[in-house]
Image (tube, rainbow, N blue to C red):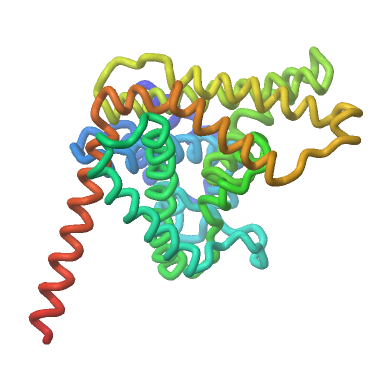
Amino acid sequence: MGFCNSLSILLLLHINQNQSWCFPITLCSSCLCSVSFLFFSSVHFTGSTAFSLTWLANFKLILFSFEKGPLFPIPTSISHFICFTCFPIKLQQNPKSQNQLPIWLLAIKVAIFGLLLYLYDYKQYLSPNVLLVLYSLHIYLEFEILLAPLKFLLTVTLGCDLEPQFNQPYLATSLQDFWGRRWNIMVSAILRPAVYLPVRRITERKMNSDQARFLGVLTTFIVSGAVHELIFFYYTRESPTGEVTLFFVLHGVCTAAEVAAKRTRLARRWRMSLMVSRLLTVGFMVVTSGWLFFPQLIRSGMIERLFNEALLSIDFVKHNFFSYFWVIK
């Protein structure tokens, strides 16, 4: 709770006095963010609250206290403020953006996700490498499928355009493209002003811009890794192993090195084909995820629980839908 107290002091010092309702809302939100995971035993509910409240909401509130981030300028109503704080959403900056997910593509992803759940019944016959690909697809597709209807409902409720959470990460041509513009865009929008820009601005006073950029990128990934360790603790209730932090440190170093390499004369002259760069990027993500990201989740049984809860949810929807349809008929 010390974090909540520190946050409330920051908010008290920096908050806009013209919006008197903001302080009690932010104080309650920060307290809720720190303990919300205790109320759920479901992997999906624990993960969603840890991601949306413990991580994003707290970072949004910290940025808001310094008049930055997606909560500033202050929303015009309490309901908007609560929604933009507690849900992983952000106002669409470019209304004409082409990043919106087409319905037909979402339908294809739902079908692929259903096929994945079917294949899990035969996982004893599948090789570890195939299972690794299935786990990676499962995490991505479940995120995309769950967040898409949430975005639609909030768009209708709030009456404003919201940015998508993902932008076809399987088409990423580099690690920078994957983490910065395609995977979990809301997180990138939070970490950039909260970590990357302050670190780069401070370090540029003591070193050149390339070194400051490297430290900014690496620090951002270290912070992301530390927060993922916390989320994994919420998932597993087990002591952190450091594996997921090492995963993000590795990607931070590789991303920073990639950014530096792109600025060299050789990189400007020679460009890799899109197909090759996409295969290398996705392959690197899958291999490193299997090495450092998934092992703790597999050992603790979280992947198995994700699969079982997804099947139970589908059975629940099917049972209630068909029962309702049968009664009407």
